[in-house]
Length: 127
Image (cartoon, rainbow, N blue to C red; front, side):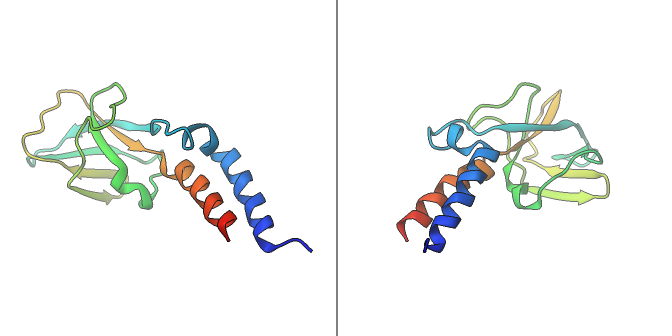
């Protein structure tokens, strides 16, 4: 009779195929960033807002937001929001007051999904 861990490993393998974890995470690949949209400066110093009515923002990934220019920021580039508030269709972010980007965009790091899957597989196999 198969062990329950075999079934879990099979499910995790399928998960890895779906999220692309095997291609990116196990090789230490760069996180994938998703462009949320162009963000506009608000009147309060350090505050920016972006319309997210057509976006799905995962509350578990709210810490993975970066304020940067139009091109995808590299590791350590851009500015991490100090505060994030969802106000209806607007996502408002506060960054340090010295941040001055003439053309600012909000990016979200999407690596968590694919990076969790291989860890789950390794933990299940150890049993």
